[in-house]
Image: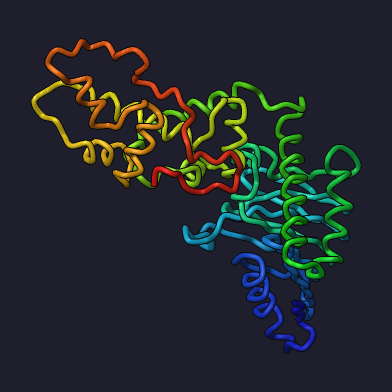
Length: 349
């Protein structure tokens, strides 16, 4: 799709251009720098979930103000590549000068501005935030930096981005998706490289995140909608990054949730007292929406059905210690926990 001001009356060009940019990229305001008729052109293509736009226009300032950002707006991450001309970019209280060949990473969910003092050409790549396997803190750490493409990961990313602008839209869907995935992997690597110059993500960062995630899981075990998606959203990260955090934990997010739910159910079923809720009520309290599924996974983990477990632990002559071979902690692997980032729902549903 190509949109241009060529056939628009001079007095309507700025209004038209403002509408074009807001509809094609994200809502923003445009303030021309010159006094004559404004000229602009934008060509937009899609590669899977990645949008690629090339903008050529006269001197101007574009601003995405807080009033233009609504909760319903999808969280996007954008990469601007300066092809000709220069720009001053500002976001999050930081300002940087962007020269030809530089790129800048920014979030459309936060206010920002670009000031172009003369005619320019830039490529803009927009993708859903959820596709990036990096935490919000890393993105914000590099937003406002002009990233030179003469070295590091930027030197590998720049020619790939240049190629995408010329081939976008010319591939079947399965190939387009793979190209978008390559872009995401390179961009994630670039962000990590810039956010952590030593080349490694500090263990303390991952450890702190894992601790918060485990606490979040424990607080929300009773929510049947607890899932990798809801956990990632609550912690400002992608599902892919969430699964990556658990790669060294000898479990997956889904298996951890199911194991913790079973542990709490086993403890409650073994508790003695006058009030004895039904097995289905206990299962529901700890996030299992299907009694049949709960019974199946409980037996797989503990070797006996939930009702028998309760009888064994609450019989009058029963000692508090569990019989040989039974434990309040499941020892069998939890079924239903996918290990790949594409998994979206728990078996416990």
